[in-house]
Each structure stands twice: as structure tokens, then as C-alpha cells.
Image (tube, rainbow, N blue to C red):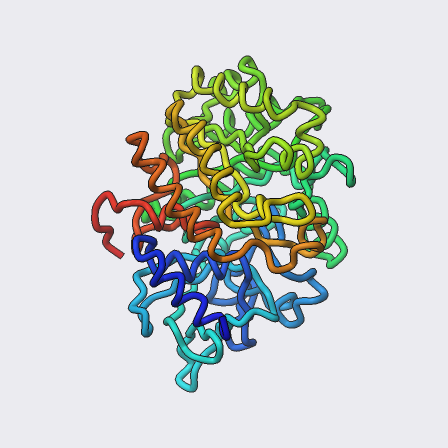
Length: 439
């Protein structure tokens, strides 16, 4: 294709059952977006909710490479509407790429828009600074540092442990920059708490609960790096579970409690349930057996792919199949040097994985791979996977769900183009809407 516009329009024509909003969203997630200085935030002192870097960088450059966007953070997310494609409301997580053909900028009237190949293609909305971000904890820490919210305020993201004990080239997942993201924020002098104190989390949630008068925050996710030994004397289930226990004791029923952790043995999974967790995300990352070994070497070494899958199935006996929602990183299937060479092969492999889990009543979800440049796969695959792969995955995902009679998973907000708030992939945008949502 001669231009990105031509590529996008060709895919929208070839795959008319995939919402046009999802085509643009996937392209922005896989390739990033540039920001004119007129579209950047004033960090925590402005009117726009800034990007919190809640676990990974999700950028196509290191902080020193982002220019002014490293000093004045871009917004956490953007909303696309209107334009020549008549886009319905679409929430997109911000992934900064100064070299992207997409650019957010203000026009002469100060109105933000999304530009592709120099042409305005959508109006852009930015999240307003929530009232709870304007209040500090008693020790001076910001709510954004301790308990940031994403998905347009729907989800409180609690990265309790900001590094991973899968460490170094022989253990780190080859697409993951959690450890580098920790290092770059510390090097830049930004506050970036390694292990969050339970009392600090509770105080931050108290502030959110007080000022979120519309109850827009509906769920929280407990997550962080894998724990292969112990942190503060606790194994993984007890370390992350203690936060859930404290939250549920102080705010019973206020939020849907979710935990992203390794695929743990059934007794450990039961402890999560006993602590008050409602949804379990034992992410399987990539389906293909060889790619799992190559791209998730630590998980292969400590657990192994087959045992990982067995544990996922076992966890349904604790949480129920509907509440076990493993994530995979969509796109690494095609990453060099070991990935599939064609979109057909990659889609066939991923669909095999979807059918395996969905045949057991489990509904996986996925995050669109962002090739962060400090990761091995980011270095060798700076352009990520082809956009066609991501569009065909949306088609295959919805078809597989229909084949097994499954509906959108709980804890992700409303499904459907124009309704969805899940911002790091388009799977919720691509599913049937339950009902119209007032905005």
C-alpha cells in the first residue's frame, strides 16, 4: 500500500464485519501515536488525566527518546469520535511513537483531532483530571502513583510489585519491559514505588471512593511481576492476596476484585478466592508450544507450558470457568526470529488456543502487542505484527466465542463498538453490544 490510509481502508473493506473503530484502534495500539505539544498534559497539575505508566511503558521509545512527551505526559487514553469515517466512541490506550503516521494535535480553534497521513480523521477527547487525583495521601504520595485508574476510570490498576523475579535474558518474557520500565522511571527521578504498602493502597482507595461520587470505578486489578521465591516473606498467592483481603474487609462489595498472577497450583488459587478475589487471570501469553518456550523462558523453566494449561483448567474448579480469564499477547506469534511467517499460520495457531480454552468454558482475552524497544522482541520487530493479523484475530475471536456460545467476560465493562472502555485491545469493541450505553 502507498500509505497507511490506503492500508486501513483496504482492511475495512475486506473485513466489513470487524468494526471500523477496531481497525483504527488496533493500528494505534500496535504502532503508537505521536503527540503535538498542543496535545500533551500538564502532568498532575493540569486539567487532563496524564499517562500513569501503570505497569509497562507501552511506548515505542525510552523516556529520553520521547522529547517533550517525557516531560509533559500525554493523556492516559484518548477517545475517538466522528470524522470522515463517522467513528463511534472508541477508547484507546496511549502508546507514544514520535515516528507514527498518526498524530494528535489541536487545530487553529484549539480542538484536538487525530491526523493520519496529514488528514484529520477523528475528533479526539481526553480524560478529564479526576477529582481523586487532586488529593494526596498523608505521606505526600499521589493517588496516581499508588492506585491509577484506566479504561476511562472503570478500572483501578494496583501494580503491587513493580518488578519481576523472572530476570535476565534467560528468564524474562521476551516482549515484556516491566523491569526496564521500573529502571527508567527511577533513573528519571519519578516516583515509582517498587512494593506498594497495603495501608497506602487502602488510603488511596479511600480517596477514590470518597470523590468518585458517580461510582465510575467498578473494578480493581491486583498485579505485578511474577514471584518465584518470596517478597516480604510471602509467596505469590499470599503477597497479592493480602491486598484483596484488606480491600474486601474495608470496602466490601465496592469493586470487582481481579488478580493477574501466574498459573498457580489449585491450593494457591483457592487462597486467592478465600482472600476475596472474584476473577483470576493466569495469563498464557502465547499458545504455540515452541514460541512459549522461546518467548516465555522463565515460565517454561519454573512451570512449563503443559502444566500452565493444566493449572488454568484446574482453577475453574475454584472460580468457575467464566471467572478465569487468561490473557495472551496478540502479535508475538509473528515476532522474529521464531514466529510464524504468515498471517494464516499465526491465526490458525491462536485460534487453536482459543478453541482449547473456550471448549472448557474459559473466555481468554488479549492485549495488543506493543513492541517496546528495550525488549528483545521489540528490538528485532520494531513494527510489531501486521495490522491484518490483528484484524483477522478479532474476527476469529468473535467467531470462536459464537461457536461455543460464550458471551463477553465479566469485569471488562460493556461490550460493543461505541460502548467498550477496555483500552489495550479491541476485543470488547468487536463483540456484540448488550444494550445501548448512555454517554
